Length: 176
Image (cartoon, rainbow, N blue to C red; front, side, top):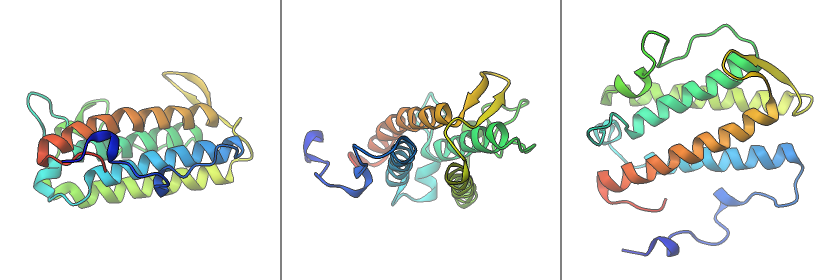
């Protein structure tokens, strides 16, 4: 088994973010890299393994996909775009539904939702006149597109750390 320090190759396209790009490009590239990491962490697993949690937690790779679909939807559709849409997997009545209500037969639905929300977010970011576009969030108050992008990078990075541990526990795979 390779050492963790030897897993990543220099020049891997996922981490090909410019160190001198403008702020919007840089933030979008870092978010793209984090999204791609989630996809890699989940790749090559059966639906049953993707839905498997590690007790006593209900955290699973499938739950992470569902959660991040809801996070994308919340920040980009609800808060920034002002759309009146419900989250797909969690709710006020079931705030942990994204993690608690997973089953192997929901893998395709979760990935479809995630891809839809990522596509919407990417279109929103590309069309926004500036990173200073704001939205109102009941939790944070007024937030800018800039803040949301930084938050999304942080959100994915944290959960990709969870995905690292889950994937290693599921099948011993490290890196990706």
